[in-house]
Length: 545
Image (cartoon, rainbow, N blue to C red; front, side, top):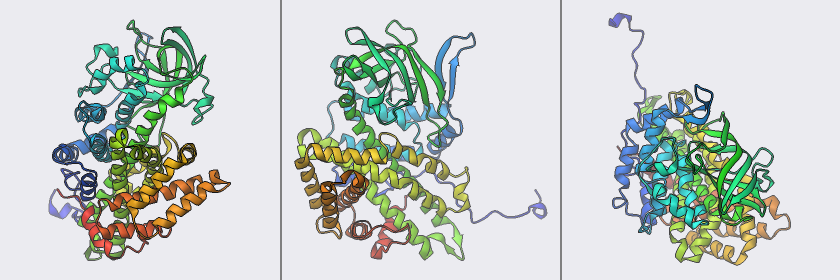
């Protein structure tokens, strides 16, 4: 176009974000890894971060969400197929994540002493790129813990669970090179109250049952099998339902529709009816909740880790914009008000990152250290509560940092913002998580007291630490403890986060977090007095290429 006809020149627009070192350039994450004994290079994390920070991989996240899955209940001849079709970008993301072992690495033999912490760094990184496909990755990883209640069944499935291939073919599992596993717990009438489930399981032979009923939410319906809860003669029981019966015919899982969700669009979540569906019993009859709880602990950990990763990507995009955008003759990063917003965001993200990695490492140590096992049991729900609830609020602030450019769909931030609530809702919403903490403390108050002592030792003499511990104890002892459940969860989260930060972050950052989150209630982002921590927080928040 001739210059005279060009209506305007485009300038002062932020360049696209991409081809970045998402792990090697993330100082808070590197420090958290080091603080938990993880050798970043030995674990291959730098190369992993390079691959997931590539412009191509980031664009796969966009494509997978702009082209959501489609349900095909019948084929052209009218036969039921109950299949879900996904965009090639989704399959590419699944293939990459499974090649990197996100679905199974902690179950490898011999086991690494830092397997959970190293995997958490990967989940944290991947979630910021595309979170929807992490759902079947998380469920496959966690399902192994529940399958341990049926050793013969676990031995049958484990080789394909451990496989680093991605086999998306809709065929019986024994014909595949790898498998993914899902779960379906909630029903229309019960939701979180799974003991209200009405799905019935009738024994047919040995550990084989026929299930009739429904599930209101069954995520990733193209998984090869699903862990579900149903009422057997002996009470609520866990079952493994494959998509194909042992004779190779399609099992009686009839997909009714896919949920039209706020976010998590790349991932399918379905409503399903079981019509005389074949299933194997996992664990004893009546022990369904006890069987599934080990899986739930692992999925809750992933919720916390992934939400921290979402916030990190939001902060990264906000920092990227602020370093390139000029407003009133200054780069945004040099404007005092914006510096306070970004530093405050960075402070919360530092705490989330430190706590996510510390909690993951407690799973590494739990088998040989009862105090670490207790830490994992109590701090995992607290981490999920605090991190996942904060994520939507923090991602909004990141979005606002870009102004209108952050609000339009060409930006990744609307997708991150819509994604943020799901981890707070899935695997126990706020009240459920808070009450679970109270139950855990009530079952073993001495071990809970030992965890609190450990957190106090980690936090040392940080401002507000002793007051937070006192608040927790008094609330637990009060006659209306249930009404204070959220207060306990929030204070426990903040205390645990401060203790985790103290293991890995610079003293100025740790002190600033304690002063603004423990010693007094946090103000809105950008209004907290961060003192001398502003500069180091901003330096550490910047992702280097």
